[in-house]
Structures are given as C-alpha cells and as structure tokens.
Image 1 (cartoon, rainbow, N blue to C red):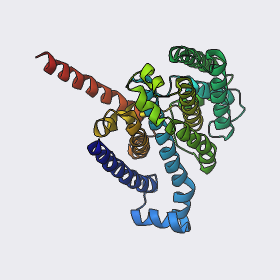
Image 2 (cartoon, rainbow, N blue to C red):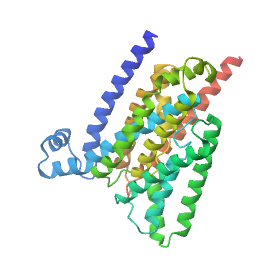
Image 3 (spheres, one colour):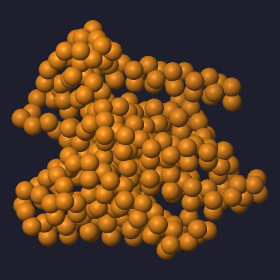
Image 4 (cartoon, helix red, strand yellow):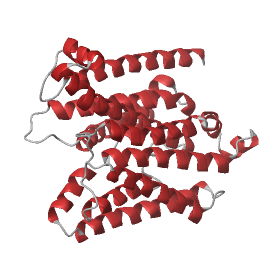
Length: 337
C-alpha cells in the first residue's frame, strides 16, 4: 500500500513537470518560432510582438489543451472505475454527440461560423439537454445497465442527427466547415472559449473526484459496495452528470477529440496499481500532457494546412491499443505454456 502511494506521488510529480515543459514548448511553437527566453518574456512582460503572440494566441490555446485533456483523462478514469471496465470511455452517455449535433446545427444553418462563441454555447446547451433526457428516460435510480442503454440510444440518435444536418446543410461550405470542426481542433481558440468551458470542466472535476472512495468500494462488486454504505444510484447519476457536462463542454469548444479519455488512464494504471481512486489524478495529468503534446505536434508537422488535433490523438490511440492486444496475447501465451 505504502509502495503504491509513493509510486503514485512520484508519477504525479513527473507528470506535473512534463506538463510544465510541454506548456512552455507550446508557447514557443508556431508559424513564428520563439526561443524559451522570448516566450517567457512575452508571457510575463506582454510587450511587443512576442507578447501579443504568446498572451493573445498561444496562451489561451495551451490552457485550453490542458483543461480539455485533463477533463477527458479524468472522465475516462472515472467511467472505468464506475463500470469496472478498462474499455469505458467518455462518449458512452451521449453528451459529446449531443454537443456536436447542436454545434453542427448552429454552423449549418448560418447562425454562426465554426469559430464563433455561439457554437460552444450551443454545444453546451446540447450536452445539458442530453443529460436531462437521459435522466428523464432512465430515471434517477435506474440501474447501470438501463443508464448505459439510454446513453447509447442518445449517442446513436445524436450521431444520426449530425449526419442528417450535414445532408441538409443548405450551403456546401457550411457542411465542409462542420466536417472539419468535428475532427477536433484548438486552432483560433481564444480566452473567451477558455472562460466558457472552464466552469463546466471544473464542476465536472469536483463531481467525479467526490466519488473516488465509491470507485474503490466498487472493485469489490456492487453488493459489497452497497453493504459498505455506498449509494449506488447517487454515484451513478453523479458520475454520468459529471462526465456529460465536462466532456460536453470540451466537445463544444474544441470539437470531437477521441482516445484521450480512453488512453490516458491506461498510461498510468501500471504505476499506481489497480485502485481506481488512485488513477483519477494521474489520469487527468496524463490526459493534459497527451493533448498538449498532440497540439504541439500538429503545429510542428509539415502540412499546407494545420492538421486537426483529433486526427493526431486517434492516430496515437490506435497503435496504443494494438500494443495492448499483443501484450495481452503474450501474457496469455505465457500462462498457457
């Protein structure tokens, strides 16, 4: 127990240091490259071209990458703890899909452009509507199976609505804009986008973190957790709402960014052990580092137009899971022999 705790502290310290280094690098990288000294001078002094580039363009983007990455990583770790399933990921309950559908509707019918502040407000509204619909259909004290089925139904419906909106978009340029927005990007995001998403993401962190002990009890099974005083219905609903508002806000601001919530908890689980409560903070830190690194990569890769960060995270996620599959195969082969 003590060894696992010390290992967790070391991992959290290492991830924090990595995040600081990635944040500084993120302030340096872009069409106008800056040295570490110029980037830090622009950050603290705010004068001249370097100050404008760092404070007005790169700092909000970096902060948003850290905020969204941490939210996705924490949401993935919380869902994996709740469901006791390492393949659980933040899109299970339909909020990201609902946010994407609402934002797509706003863009398609010329209510706003993809970079307008109207789009994230519409996306957050869509996520909140999906939460209300999920609670209304499944009920506040529904079983986990019923809640999952209702969430999958909402996710399928919202995905179909997004496809329908793309088909019915009166302007082909709007449809193209939606398609690129859905790939996920932090380009052209401002402090206003950060301020819109931050309250929802922070509320999500609080709701998910307050259930850490319940996740630990659930490793013994639902009956054992209930005998230890865990209110399973309250925990389920709190986690669903926490994941939905955090991930919904992330999608509303940055579009769909896949695999971060699924991969980040796996990156830290071996170091902290199987206790899901200990995975939460390292999972959030790993998610923040992963998304920030991916956002740096899209700015460094040579391309006519900047790649979408959602594409990069998916390209990272697929090889990761292939590696997991081969690792499991080797373990099974060793056990059989």
